[in-house]
Amino acid sequence: MKYLASLDPSLRQSPVIHLFHATAQTDIEAMARLDADAKAAGVRLYIYVDGRDGFLTGERIRNAVPAWRDASFWFCGPSGLGRALRRDLSKAGLAVKQEFNQELFEMR
Image (cartoon, rainbow, N blue to C red; front, side):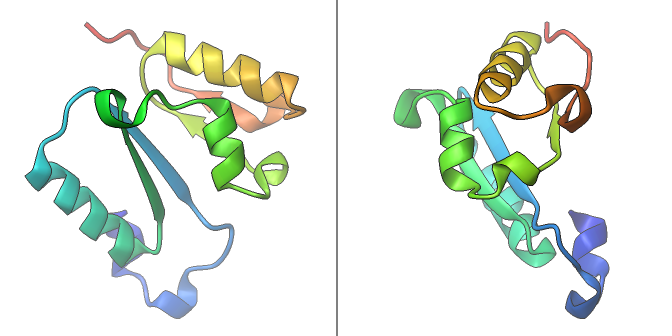
């Protein structure tokens, strides 16, 4: 986002970037910085705090991003959540083999 923010806004082209940030706990300062970075970069930010908002789901993503079928998904996070989102989006019609990219790691 720092790189995008450094660009002249006229150089930022589509597609629009939607960033979904799911967390179990919040740090008000960190969330404020994340929000400021997203705004400066022209990124649409969605923050889900488990205890307050419930979990991030494929349905929530589909509801927030009308053109989700044409989107490319890049996932970084717990592998279980990645598998659940991939499965959900696949059932809903996303070509996950081409459009769902997941970083492979396990959280400790």
